[in-house]
Image 1 (cartoon, one colour):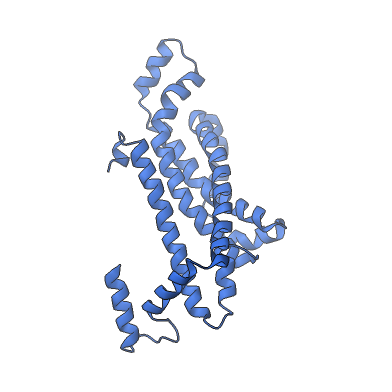
Image 2 (image 1 turned 45 degrees about the vertical axis):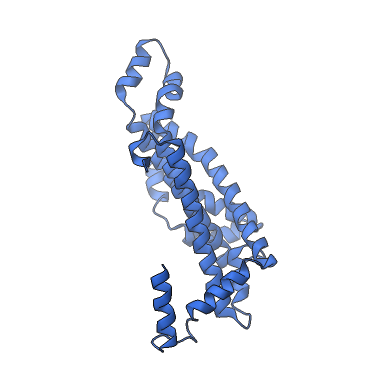
Length: 243
């Protein structure tokens, strides 16, 4: 990363890249450092993460039970698979203009877009995880007289938990992208995306825009890193999450 920044700085100072079209890396870093103490920007970051947290929480509350149902009851999965396969490939960002007509409140729209985009990795990972459960363990519990619900709670759900955690980690990154994208494309008065839009009209618009974008990337990396750390701590016994 440091090498890339040095290369970008040198390219700008030597004239290989126009500083009118792209500011110097040092200028962007100074602006980004200034944003860390900018109260308005910090409030916008808080607004984005509030929508992110609420949207992701609602997604987990919906997608995990839905994935368990679809993965445990083949008839339901067969009935809903055409709907899932139709909706899943639709680009979430392409639905933002439609959502702007449907939702009058910007927070509701952000949450709806977050839930739509973030549902799929959790849902699919939950269904996939159920297929990986040891059939012998399930059959053993059934032999001892345990019903379908007991088998699900005692064997299937614990075995599927690492897959669910991976789905939540992927969904967390997607949720942050959708929160900022919705703020960028649908307008509004708060959030990182709204700050970037307003920054574009300021005297140092290009520098502030790039600096805010850098912060968006850093926050995404930090969020993903936190989820990776939590996965490794909670599921250190699972091969897929071993350090």
